[in-house]
Image (cartoon, rainbow, N blue to C red; front, side):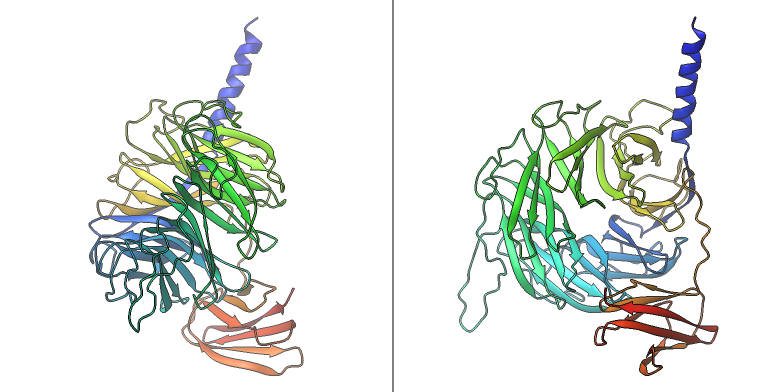
Length: 538
């Protein structure tokens, strides 16, 4: 009588064990000086490598080669696909500079966005506007500075995300506590950049820049209490989707009532920053949104943390403590499904990606022992967690990686070989999965292999161009080592349009001044030659 039931339980145990072991840890590396270094963002790069971004308190020590200039500085670490250093960069003023966001730009460089209370120093050129400002820095492909901007009002501004836009500019998303504060100075320009009145204690603040970093427009959105923007993304129609945390009732720019202590609040803007619609999601307790993304089908997925039981418009109750809460919307912002995910007493989502097959990968951290070994929660000790879910929200597998100390995951990246890179900060000593360390807090990256995916054995091209097609810039990736070379752009008639010397494996090429059509980029080096065809235009 009990045999079928026993076999059923055995099958479940076997299935769960397979899920928990569906990923291999391929390698892990730590970067930092002897003091504290905090990773806050990471991106894959066109040359198959990665760029890590955060803030550093360390002087020159460990594998950090530059001294900090003030309290905390921006710190960038560019590495190859195996985690080996390509270059690193330290940027800062006299005070605290916290780098929250980094993105690739079409010219092969990078745009950095964060918060600064620094006065001018070795790297920072502009004075602080108020208590804290947005600080934007544009780097080229080698890490050299091209320009920087300080943007702020008379109070506090916190920049959480910077995103390149389709017109070649940038959109900044953050929060502001500044009111309009105009100082009339004899013969001097107004030092403040904020043009909208403060709605409450803290508001969403969105700033649109052109390609040179000049302000095109700005929007302040909020209710009468605290509204903290966490995520911004450009949508397929050229507009923007923004989201964050709100404890404001229906007031000012917020038209919907809240459900609990704090809720998810999302707003759809058009290309000029005008509100198209807004939505509030939450239960009776505190719910904090950290990321919102437009999905491949034109809908949206919202990710954050929830302390609420079933209440408000939350239909899935928490399993234990604070859980990850996902809400999937259609293109009209109507709920398709929602789900909560639990691995420990406190689960915090920090990263969310949609895979090409429609599945999703969630990244964050949780107070839990290694899943599959011990089930008891660890007090005040967090591990990296990764959870893969199907397109309908069903959990496929989950993985915990960590040391005996505090490990805070900030970014999860799908790699070109079908694996994943987990990037964050570790305070733990060398223990468990962590085999390396530099200081009290380090950048810590872990490479996982997803055994559920077929291994991508694609042979790397000798030359490839990304993006292709392009409207202006393309980056030619050279798949072999060389010392010196020449790049030549020719049209289909064989006319040479430009020639320039090259020394790097990522070569930005500007096709912006040419008519739409097909072009050939030839690379000739001491180690070999090759060419790649690039389409200019749609």
